[in-house]
Length: 228
Length: 252
Image (cartoon, rainbow over all chains, first blue to last red; front, side, top):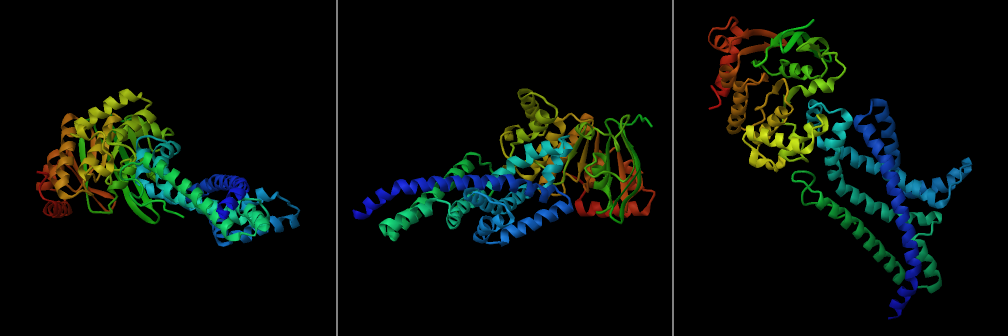
């Protein structure tokens, strides 16, 4: 009973943090899409030089631990005279890393549609762009949904690392409350439950979307985004 | 140079890297004619077809569609609309139904309205015997059915001629018959067709002219009956007999 009261007391603070977590997730994923898509295009349709450049970026972004990246942006960049608000620093760090992973998802999805459909579209007299929009994209999007759901859940959870550079998100709100109540177990469990609910919503939403637009023969039938 | 032929190919050359796959191919196709190209694998047969619609741009030579020289023409998308192409691996759009596969070229390329496109799609599906499969997706069709949708898709664009690139080569033997039958009907209806195939029965009974190619060159061309029974070149005889042995006399 005592615990329940504690949770009820903590909840307004935790929900305030949750809102920041959601915002971090939203903007990071958006950066991931905005940067990741051109990278995927460069890898599939670009020339050798472009492919080389994005390959280096992708390699770097996937090799540096997110925590190190966040610390570099937040404490390293000011030394170069570039001071960025912590929320934005977090979004940039998480977003740029997600871009590297998302680019791989989009690249794989585009490539898995296959060159023969592109050829067929061109043979009907479609330009490259038209063929991409009407033939490749509708299939690639469907193929990409399960791994994007997976990536979204990962980004959502990794926003907790923004804690380390001082963003007052869900975890840090919890820390504040623990400092006054001295009940780490209950609060951390509550935080864990909130993350659980959020990832479930993200996955559930995308999987509904997936089912609604499902077409026989496209995507991995049956198996999908159980990514927690 | 203008030409009275529907399609005229002059001294076509192509190479992939160092390897020359076409070493000066010339032939022509008149309206309503069916010509069949045969020859060993890697001879450049498919390359000719790909060169014609510039899915693979030719290295040298000229190709005319009626009076237009299409090897260097700028509006390639307009030229492609006039030349149908049927692929070995079907090239169906997997996210669209059989009907949708046919409609998309009509609505997005020819700017036909949806209702008209749908009517025409159903008509063409009926022509290849697949009207009841209009709402099936490619994954729900057999190989033979897929290829018939591929043919219907090409037909719906109302092309001046259709190129067939080994249309039955990726089909199980028992499914080739239904595709060949559709092609035979088209030939009889007067469609202009250029077909690359190993189906000797089809070549012998449907083609107006048989073109035997080897190593990037035309060895012999002419009336199929003559090539089968009394060819000028020993090599033609060997090859045609070998293929007839391998694939049988026909589609029946």
